[in-house]
Length: 391
Image (tube, rainbow, N blue to C red; front, side, top):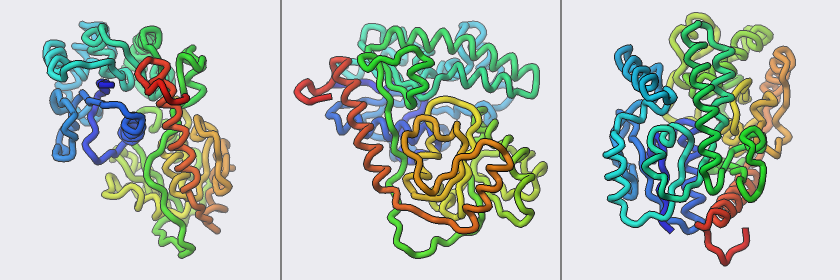
């Protein structure tokens, strides 16, 4: 069975964002299910391309981050979006032309179906694949995230842009779900919101992130009381970070050491001088392990929080909001739930005072087994799976 995994950014062997980590997990499960998968999309501009697999079709290089683009590039994306009545995120994909995508598809030889990985690529090029049966992977309910971002936006222009995106995304996601032979979501809530909560139509994919770290009994070396890492340029993540910095941190002791890794704007370091903003780090696992406790601070978004899964796999102590636990059926004993700022701060202080690491291997194995079962079920419901195996 030969399937095309149509995505915005192709894997390059070094997944950095939650989106890329999720893609790696899904592609691994498809491979274990016996599928031949050809990946099609764009390489991340500026990264080493040597780890891109041979079965990957690269349509060009791009940096999809809006905040990393210059003013002229943003205007080009906006003009494309407006003139074609498409989302801003899908307009970025038009770096390649429909003719180039069609030629790339033809060059793959016989193809049995396509997996649309999230909305960005599909929103730009789904007509080219219309003759093929398809599966849709909904990483999030994108229109809900856009609505949340619009409400949290601090400028009229941002509110307008997110509002426009939300309206177009709601229509696009409904079309993708209606056309799909099967839909994968990353949380049960998303199945309900998308209106596909039928086991014949959809399944939830429990994800894995990294191989778990074995607990040896030796005391873990730490540099901070709390360590956070994330893609803060993504609006739902930024909503959580702002909540943490503005509402939780004031309740923490002055000597409570906090480090934030990831692409946080430089202005945040000026506004919050007591926080160590360390930028991009070479090893995300080693960084989060350098904190006594991990704050899981999501306040918006849909889908699942990969940082939560990573933290549980690593067995690290954590304090989590209810939103950070969405799509997670198991909460380990060293995770405390808190949604009120003072309660969250108090829980962080307690956890950092006597951190307890757990063995995350059982969680990892259960997640991976459930992921494989869900992927195989979707393939079989779509007519792509090995029919002699039970779903």
